Amino acid sequence: MIYNSPADWKNDNRKRVLLFGMSGLGKTHISNMLRAGGEWFHYSVDYRIGTRYMGEPILDNIKREAMKNPFLRDLLMSDSIHIGSNMTFDNLAPLSSYLGKPGDPARGGLDIDQYILRQEQHHRAEVSALLDTVHFIDRAHDLYGYDNFVCDSGGSICEVVNPDDPNDPVLRALSENVLLVWIKGTEDHNQSLITRFDNDPKPMCYQGDFLSRMWNDYLSNNNCKADEVNPDNFVRWAYSQALAYRQPRYQSMAENWGVTVSADDVSGATSAASFDDMIMRALANHAA
Image 1: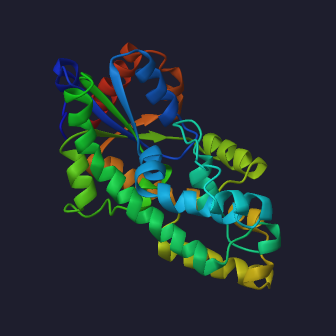
Image 2 (image 1 turned 120 degrees about the vertical axis):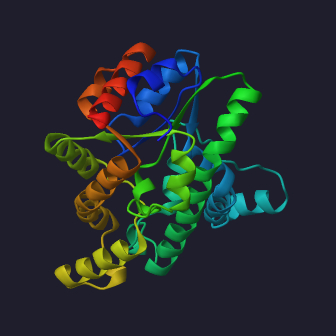
């Protein structure tokens, strides 16, 4: 790690950190809070994926849907209108809508092969966006004058790395440039995340073998064909499985490559100073 003690962090005039964990536990909350203070650069991996690496297929998908409407088709074909996606750090809906959910097309579902293709696109894009972290550390400093840097990673980071491989290229590149910090939730937090997801099921990213196993299990358990699957029901069912699948992977990332903070501590961090205190406690715990 680039920091091995609280003193290392306190004395560094160019602090660099990457936050990871399940979506909903505070990564973006902390990143926004630090950015709002004016001394931290906020790099969003999901935003980078959706704009730099998947912007074209996202836009093509929107245009494909628009082309189904004769009125919009004529305007598009004559270059009379322009279609774009308005993606922001806080609104990643264009990326989510492109990833979609597998199942019955009458209920908005994607063919499973198309769904897997889009998952693979996201996997490659996420690896590239994570490796871009190093470039943005330098860019934030040299171009914009920011000394401090926070990387707001996606919840699926643990799906695209091998935390038990000391030569994992992504984790090695990251650990040489940022402190990896796992935001760890409790069982109560996990249940809250599941309840929130049940109320508003959204597209997810999955590791390939895990997705294949979940898809086949769902078809078998519900005795249905692929085009009969209710897309929302599938992602609701898969979410709790993904939560359990990711937990040990996050833990290995923290144990082998970084430190751990609790989601409760994150929710209580309301300033850059309180964030510094939280990181120093995590480093002290790691050293102990």
